[in-house]
Image (cartoon, rainbow, N blue to C red; front, side):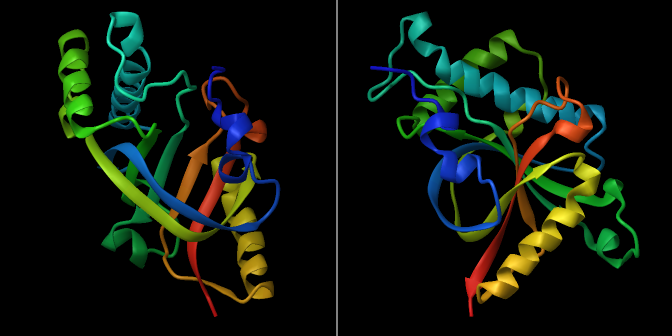
Length: 207
């Protein structure tokens, strides 16, 4: 059986080329919540914790453990749901210090609560990351959304959101939450800002 690769098998979810309506089903995730500027060290600890656990699941067969239903796959990309705290909402400018966010990495369907806890204990024995105990295993659903691919710096996202809002106006859709999701297709450590690829997604309702 060939390796499951999300870039090839799930292009409608992870590689949209233009603003599109999509009904996103429930999925399993490792999640962690944070607040403040994402350029600080704590944010990096959150991301590292999620990836450590995700690769811990992925590498189980190499440790002689093959969970029921396991299949070869590529680890899913990092995602984040972004909002502002109460102070941030009152400002007439965007302050990253007032961000509130939930970071997550999708997990294959064979991952269970017990498997999560087993891998968590195993990773904690090897990693000193203090954020590991803050990671949760959750099933989440985005539901009806509009999404598109943003190419460029994160700071330039407002222009892409404007295109998404225009798509909503043209297709009898209404954005129903101020929060939005970002899916990081590019690694910012290895990609110049103008070439970053980020899926932007927000929830909508039909009018």
